Image 1 (spheres, one colour):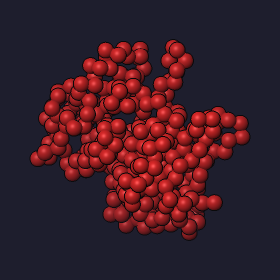
Image 2 (image 1 turned 120 degrees about the horizontal axis):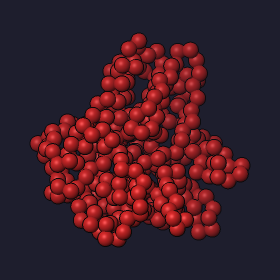
Image 3 (image 1 turned 90 degrees about the horizontal axis):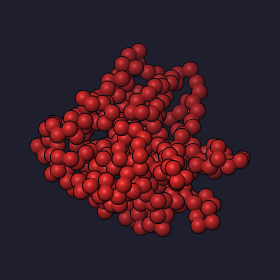
Length: 327
């Protein structure tokens, strides 16, 4: 999942930055008065997620499960799986974390770019796609079909942010912002003594002349999470000149034809915001957004950038999003 870039600024000598790479993306952490061994604590969280949920680590729990091994999972893994399952049920299967074989088939997985799949190949893979074919029971992960594969990439970064914040709380850090691949959670205030502020990347920036870098700026209350998902950068152009995006329709097996460019979700936990942002991207049709707003209720607030029939960029936002938007 490629997410919109986020921009934020902190100043003041007491606030320090920690930057690095993880899960195929980058992380940025800003905090006030970190402990001397903070980098070690950060690395421990990142290593934990890598050894449990990374499909790019052949020895991780999820990779071993995908190979057919029986693995024992902890409460964090189960929470991630169940959060994804809730979005799968809510979206009636449009959002699905078992699309790993499809992702790989279309050239976005560990195997890399390859020839575009045939209808026969897609139909063959669809037989064992569906999170309803998997379950967690007695701290173990099971699947009905040995060919089924699990990919928690759409929620793993959000969970990592939540775990990182839990670690910072344990270390007694009162003011911080954690960002991993565009998924954010913050606590307290920034170095400017204000609420933390982030900018949501403008999908047209760098494409249309004069397009600003951010399409909207948000102020984030303490204890709030933000996740953004988009498909306007992670794509390739096939031999026919058609753009193939990484957002796949788990029901058809094809890349989702969509006018939605990005989806930003504000929720109590980052793993939930991460799942819902990907889910909103997967639905593809802006006309369905009102239905999702009514049924998600207070569970989250969201803002979706899309193009209308005339090709103009539009924004759909739920009623409460105005409380977070900076004018």
